[in-house]
Length: 112
Image 1 (cartoon, helix red, strand yellow):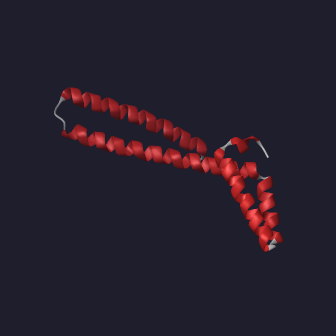
Image 2: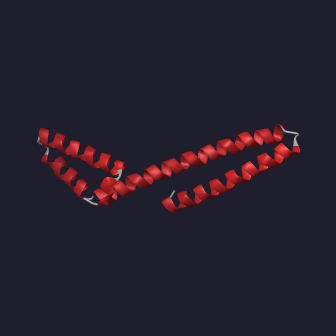
Image 3: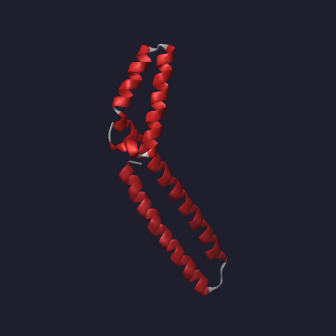
């Protein structure tokens, strides 16, 4: 096993596969046992894939949240007549655009 075991997601993945292995033993399914052992031996690859998918999902949630916030601010901008408030809202939109760009870069790095 490798250093990823300290990660809670890695621990959960390994525990799940050990539970499946024990179930395969109880069933007497030797083919399934071998398949599970091979996956456990390659746990780093599987765990890294799971972590990347989890990270990508979290980034998309953040991206969507930023888009919703921007839409709300644009609604406020459209309705406001106050110049000072308008400037504050425009600055908020700008900050959200920067955050969204950062998330886009991270998504691209994840392969999404």
